[in-house]
Length: 121
Image (cartoon, rainbow, N blue to C red):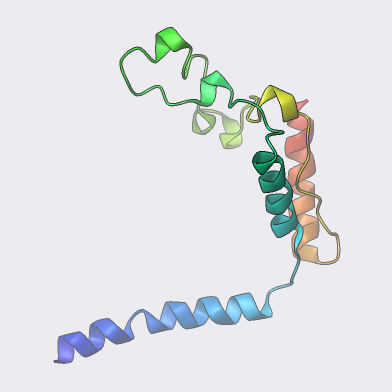
């Protein structure tokens, strides 16, 4: 009985911390808006095909189909970042995330996003 009680209590502490942190964190709907815009494009068929180098290459014959060929594993590169096309050709220049600069947290995210955007050019 004691072991059951201990196991049941342990998750309460990290869950409580998560709830408090989420409640007190600055709010923004930038990520939510980006996701909605991307899903809208997906549902309306505006996205096109996933680039072949990002498609699953873990099966026989995948390379012959161009799957995974020339894929660059980001973690093999400095700062785990590599210039590589991730979006389909049809939307490769589309920007879904538009940061709101209303909090220091999102301002910091915006700086990282801008840096990565410049590296991608």
